Length: 340
Length: 291
Image 1 (tube, chains in turn brown, cyan):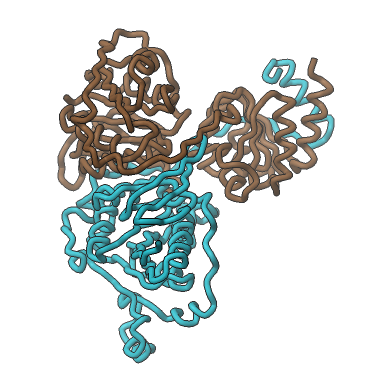
Image 2: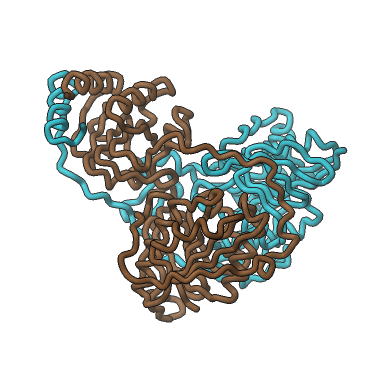
């Protein structure tokens, strides 16, 4: 009762990295609250294959549901599992990845349990809350902190009266770490049919095709990112060239993705990937808050912009005032000349 | 074999947060809604397009636009009619105000029950003012319907089963779902068709009662042409429970809202000259920041 739960999603028998990141965060929250960290995973043929990917992150108890029809993921069976498990276990907090699966599953579970859900949190903390209207005081609520309104404001959301307090978090926002303390590491394999009704399996997956990620933007030490100021898809070609010579990856702002200059999976910001590289080279990016939130933890930020007053320049270590067409080829040229 | 479908499109009027200008935030750090243009939520337009295609492929089908908001959100229904929708409903009531996603989905689900016998409920994956993607699945759960989120294309509907291609993390999936169902459409789906000039002429003056002036100069027009009278529903009209609507039906509460202030750094400003760029590269190489 009253524990912290993390829903772990899988592709086949591989546990998603975002789930491991959330286990690490969930462990910290559980320690702070003095409760246990529990994990739940559901799939087909996962027994004996996923435990080692979940337990080391400080899990006290893992509920592993293994049965036909649980992979590929469909909404209803996984919803049934969580809803019925939560009715028994009464968790106070449930975290899941803000992935396609988490964003499909979370709302269904919250709707079914009438509990509050906050999407795409960027920070999770424990704190008190005083309801001004009802004059009630609440201890140890989950602060669900997220940007709102296109990233122009940041809101702290609480769910005072409904449990579990549910939140989704994007991949890369939290950092995973093997737990150094002692966790109970208990594993149970509940009988799936006790949780999922036969009618839940009506949605059929005819074809499921996942490609290995084409790039490692999230983990790359050097990121070359382009904004609307790149002007075109062709403009991005020179960023790919710069990234190639620097052994980095290419990212993009939302404006550049919306304009079709770059693929969605390279979007950096609140609604994309969060990155923490050693070097971030922002080319033609004005620096809307929603973008900055996804890259502000970069160690060195270099901004290339023809506008000396671009907002991103305020957080940059180096500002090169000039057009991307002029500067980027020079960066490539002088790197080639001076390296080694 | 095709079947006449009753399709409800969920659509939201949103502030255009993608193009936030300097006036968008007040000096106090709150949002200045008046400075942001109100638009048809982009992914809801993708959903409308899928609905209109289904209508064309399945003779006898109807498409209605369901929206919730203040009276001026009637514009969303008109925009739907201009593109080929048949009807629409505006949910408007002070009791709906302050709703989080759960209270919103309760209101929409209640209205959909009132509309009745709906085969497909379809909407955008998420709205750009909240980016939560929660309302679609929450509506589905409240109606006890199956859902397909992140849809890119409805490939076919046969024998009451929809075949849908959807986006998933790192790939694509094709699924079969029996009707009735809820579908949310991803921004990568086909863009919506433009307004049709004839339909714009026909529905230009269509409005909800609350959008009109007390002494509306077009009162005669509304009396003689019923298709110009858009449906406007209150909580009572949809037999809703006020405790599950608006602020009181919302489990989530906003504790604080803050303007975002980023820590400014002391930055070195360089020109685009060869000398400046070369010295930067050398500095980064010497300090082993780049390798």
